[in-house]
Image (cartoon, rainbow, N blue to C red; front, side, top):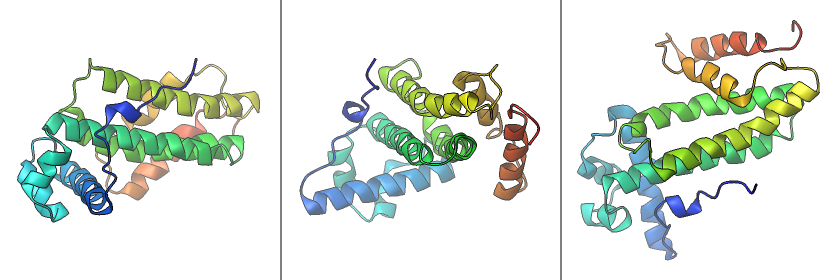
Length: 190
C-alpha cells in the first residue's frame, strides 16, 4: 500500500515569491498564535503577527478550518520528514528521537485539534501518515532486539501522547520523564 498523500489536504502554496513569503509568514504566525491562545484566536491577530492584511490571510485561507488543516498537515509532514532523518540513526536512537519529535508536534496538534473535524479525511490521513512514519522505526528497533516485541506503534504513540497531557514544571522535566518511559519499552534493562 503506498504511503498516504497529504499534499491535497492543505491550502496550496502560491508560486509568486512575495505571495509564497506571505503564505509562509501566515503559517508561522498561526502556529505561534494558535499554540499560545488556542483555535478560537481572532483571525486578524494571525494576520497582524504575520504582518499582512486580513485580505491576504483570507486569500490564502478562505476559512479558519482550512488554515487549521493546513497547519496540522504541515506539522504531520514535518514529523514524517523527521522519520527519514531518524532512520539514519541507530535503531534505538532512531525510534526514540522520532518519538521526541512527535511529542513536540502534539503541542501544535492540541492547539488546532479543536478546530478540525476528527471524523474527516484530513484527521484520518494524518493519523495514518504518523503510523506509517513511526511504525518502521519501531519495527527496526524490535528486530534489533532493543525494544519490547509486545508493543505496536499504536501502543507507543498512546504512551508518549500521555506525556503531553501532564503539566510538567519544565520541558526538561517532561523530556526526562519521557526518557524514563521509553526506557521502560526497552527489550532489556538499559
